[in-house]
Amino acid sequence: MANGENVLHRLRQLLIPGLLNAGESYKLELLNLAVWAKSNPGMGSFYRSQHELVAVFKRQGEPK
Image (cartoon, rainbow, N blue to C red; front, side, top):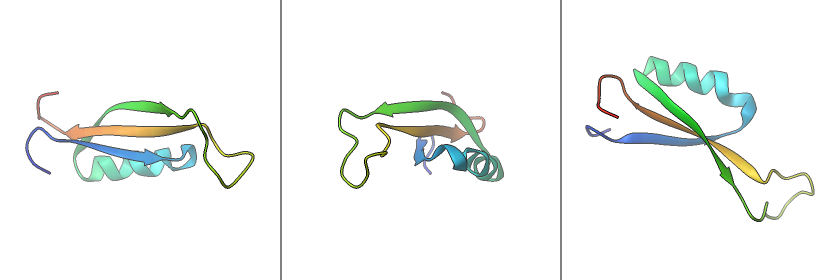
C-alpha cells in the first residue's frame, strides 16, 4: 500500500468483527463504513440485498 492510499473492502454484516481485527493487525485505521445502495439487487435470489457495506481503511499515522 503506497503512502496516502486508502483500502476499500466490501463485506457482509456478519464479517465486520473479523475484518476490523484483520485491519488492526495490519495497522490500518477504520475511517468509515459506507453503504453502497444499489438500484437493482441483481440476479440470483428474491432476498438478495439492495445494499453492500464498504469498509474504508487507511494506514495509521497517514493524513486523512
